[in-house]
Image 1 (spheres, rainbow, N blue to C red):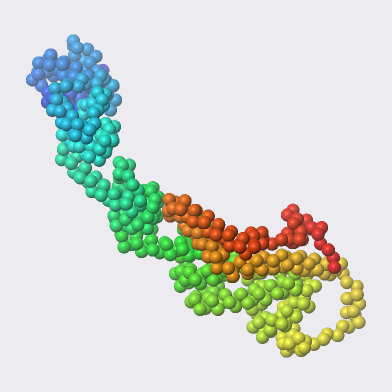
Image 2: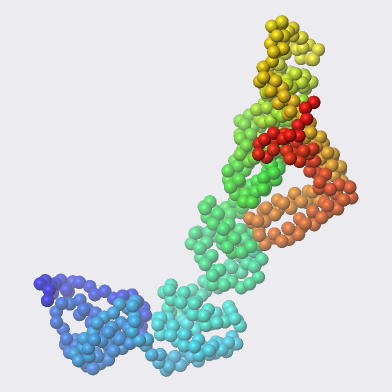
Length: 572
């Protein structure tokens, strides 16, 4: 015996804890005397004083034999263990553990229920097997759901499933209701009424998405998720309308994007989706013009396109700038930097962008002419700025090319050209005839005669670069001639335009509507066949659009893939 104990006053003020599962699962099925005996015994477990079964029976005004039978009932339920009957000694077990024998199902208790269940099944044209009926009765024995409430679940599932009605579906539905504490007829009726409303919502969403089946229980989870996030039904419908085809999972991805942006009403959703489509269209068009394949436009839209459109650039202007960037071998990041410079200079409207691109195009053409004279000259923004500066000095293309000829042997042609033109500007020479002839001093002649090895090597390198540049230009001229012939043919132009449009549509479909991919792929193949037919009629082939280099090893660059110089160079 312990050396300490609670006083009677302390015991009076303490509490006896009863598990909720006992109240929901066992209390509705037990008699009042059984509940009183269970609770009083639970109370006595917490008391340190001696109290035998006879005194407990007298206090509860029950015969001792009935008290023993009552605890035998609770033993069958798995809530207590009878360790001794004379004298009666009970050990309480956790309700959640319930390891005792199951309660026997009393057939007379379910006579009326079985008749009503049979009528519902007969109406639905179904006949459950004995083990299915047993599972249903076990559910009612082990759960506090009313029989009429369960019959309402059966009626709901029969209307929804028809000939596909199964006991598993009925029990799954009933278990979900029990988990949500829906036990009575009124509670179940109200819950199923909500499901009927949601079924109408799902049916409309299915129609918008082109889904041809009845809603399943798992589909309602999506509606519950969106409702809990505060998204209006109108916003969900707007997303489904925009997708046109797809699944609830793909729709959930789009709505999750709306939730991320805190877009929840129908008006906000339609505005966001329209803006989203505008941004995606701009990204796909710019990507196509840059030669960049875009699969998911969202990152590009958020990082680049959204800023460009907010600054006032339209799609046509962006495509023009992308065409310029393609010639400069730029990607999205470099184009963004170029647009930052243009915006800083106030070049935003369509006319200003066109004028800027035309000016840059002329500079590029002049740079290509310089490249044909001087050899390899990189097409960079700095080189274009240098050409623009020379023109701002009032030099004509003729004078700039004259400077290029005189810089052909220099190791760095552009800086050398810049020095020459700067000197001619200072001397007021703006035509070839005005260029002063320099007298070579005796000392300079001696220096020129005794040239350093570095100078000789630089000259040889320049000569080598001009040699390969000429080869590449000849290969490209053949391709340009073939393109010119093909582009004059209307059938070829239409097929080529259809292929380009199809590539953009395919990229969009991969993200927004995967279900349309087979149809778009078929249309793309048809366009490719038409293009091939047009080329055959024009006596052209795909090989005509591929440069044929003299040297297959280095592709007329002068260098092999491993970086070594090619042996195809021929000194003049």
